[in-house]
Amino acid sequence: MPRKRLRPTMKDVARLAGVSVQTVSVVINNKPDIAPDTRERILSAIDKLGYRPLAIARSLRTGSTRSIALVVSDITNPFFAKMASTVEDYAHRSGYNLILYNTHSDLEREKKYMESATQRWIDGLLFVSTQDSMGGLDTLRAAGIPTVAVDRIPDHYDGPSVILDNLSTGRLVAEHLLELGHRHFAHISGPLDLRLSRERLESFQNAIAARGIDPGIYAVGDDSWSCESGYHAMRTLLDARPRPRAVFASNDRLAIGAMRAILEAGLRIPDDVSVVGVDDIEFAAYQTPPLTTVRQSLTDVATLGIKILLGILRGETPAQTQAVFEPMLVVRQSTASPVMGKEG
Image (tube, rainbow, N blue to C red; front, top):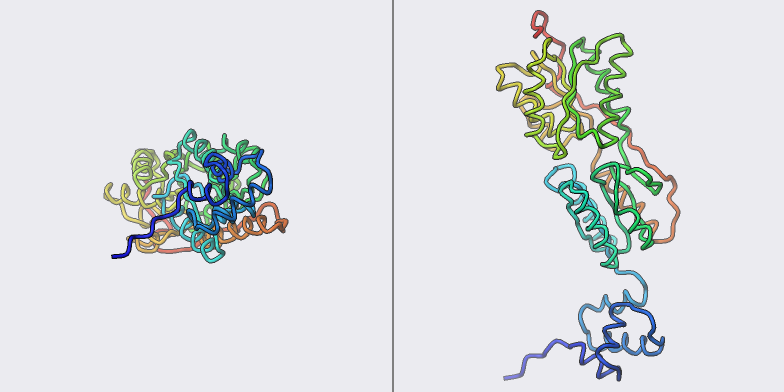
């Protein structure tokens, strides 16, 4: 019975190259102070023996690992799940591997993941920042790793980015609800330590106030942007007098949670309360009633982000530093004119 062929070891590489195991280790870890001819001899031995993936030897020669990283704040959020799927698919078709980091909206974990990404020899990084401040940026800059911000732009970041026009988003929702005849408003925001949350809130309220109408109250959701967060925020808003007749939630999950609270209170959507969300996630169209929302094409946003990053890796200069996607209102059955005589 033939003996099973053993995988080559570092000792095998060292023996073939005529060097010590320690010298092989130094080359594999891309450390300096190795003579060029010695380095080349070791890399050739790695190639010949097939020691570990051949990509190791190639990456040491070319300076590229064909790996990129994506950092998101919450992979359970359908928005980020769709983004990750789109980026992974495009990266795969372009010959790159994707490393995913999920920060759970934890600043310290985000910073550690940034440091980890630089140590894994990644070629570039796409990221969605947890908050407006982002401690890991200095690490990336020092390592010279190209980056592209998606959805959120942290403070002091001047690199390429792909975002939604959040000021237009709030204004678009306000105009829709005003045209329906609403006069009693409320907003459920994302965490206000994020610029996009503040922009959606302020533009929504400013557009209403410009008509000489009270922009109403707001409740702040937590950093999970979850249905549960929207549910609890809406329960608080329903205690207000006059009761809000039109609610703008800063994402679809918050809106879906708000809808549950409204129905539990014995109210009807949209007869008693109209509801609008943002993102147009898959579940939005399958609510009862289907949710009116502001669409941003997650596929387009993610695809443009990865295209810009790969272009930079090819030595190209981005055509624009900041790509801004204009929002589109998708009107469904969760919004309608207020029923007369139903004021809270």
